[in-house]
Image (cartoon, rainbow, N blue to C red; front, side):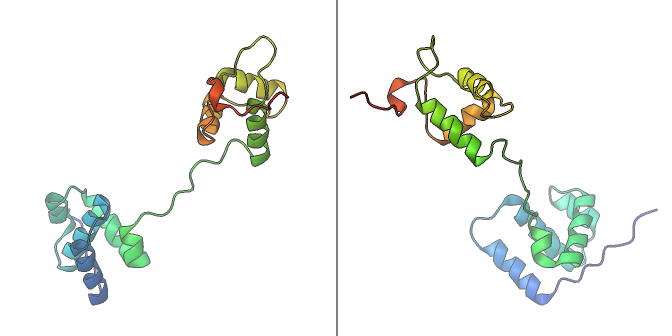
Length: 158
């Protein structure tokens, strides 16, 4: 038994905005596909026909129609902002690790390595635990390369 036809009433103002978006410059492909699908829905074309015309599934077209009805044009075209992963190190922890890297390496080591920084940060109780990749990204974000002597700030001997 087929699903009932999808009825979406797209306002004239929103239709004009969609057409302007399609005429405009650079936009994400998914936004353009959603805009085309919404225009086709407003013309009375069904979800299966739209799914055949565009690289979208029937369910994606139905979800698009539902999002438009519930939240309007912005909600239908664009995804919600995603929070991303929480930072593993706090600002004071990052500062202490950077300060440690800028000092001399421990006795018996010629230079800092990412593995050595991670070990020493835990040993000196700067952080409870930390991985090498976290340290690598931290050093990269500060443009520090402790394995290269030239790039590390060291206190001058007078």
